[in-house]
Length: 100
Image 1 (cartoon, rainbow, N blue to C red):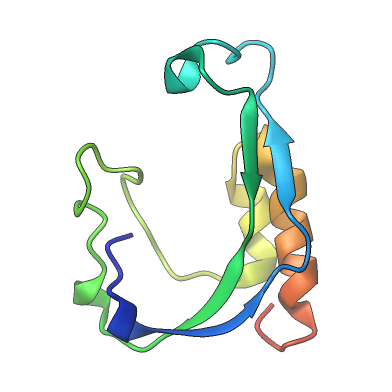
Image 2: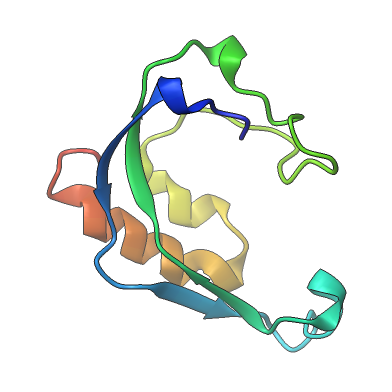
C-alpha cells in the first residue's frame, strides 16, 4: 500500500498463521507456478497518516489498483471467493479489539 512506518501503529497480530490454496483454475498460472497459495500472519494497525500518503503505486508492478475505507465486516464480501474464509477469520480475530 506504500504506507510508511511512521503512519502505522501496530495494535495486534493474528495468533495463528492463516492460509489459502489457489483454486485449480489458477494453479500453475499465478506466481510463475511456483506456489499453491499463501500462508500469512495478519496485523491490525492504526493508520495515522492522511489519505494522500497512501501510495498504491509505490511498487512496480502495483499489487492493488484502487483502495477505499470500509467497515471491516464488509471485507469478506469484496475479496475473491477463494480468499473469503481468510478474511472472515481476520475480521473475527480482531473484532474483540473494537476494530471490526
